[in-house]
Length: 157
Image 1 (cartoon, rainbow, N blue to C red):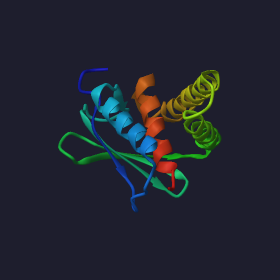
Image 2 (image 1 turned 60 degrees about the vertical axis):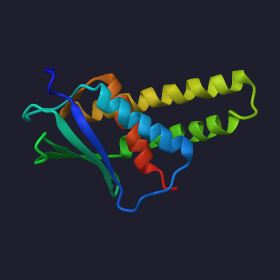
Image 3 (image 1 turned 180 degrees about the vertical axis):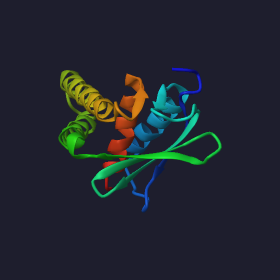
């Protein structure tokens, strides 16, 4: 991909801002920062970027609004969340256990939960990559960070 095939800005469009705990807000901020710093992203059949990306939920779909550098909407890609729902649910469960374990559980327990969390994150990113392969060309790290942001949008409090 050429140097212009990247996301330059990301916005999570949440109709009603949801309060999340500090750890989740931090994960979201890191994912957005890391995504903007290094990504490889190109919607197929579109002009070269850089791109502005807005992510939002609509019913049981994730919508990716992709605009060019000038802000004009280039395209909207809508994706059913059904293929991702099981891994998102499992990911939330393991993350919750992980954050609860940090203060007082043995290091081996925390490490095992972290490995499970990373494995589910990789699985979710791969599913997302597969679901979008006919619409968007992206690298694995970009898919991982987008999966994180989709998970954040799924949270309700």
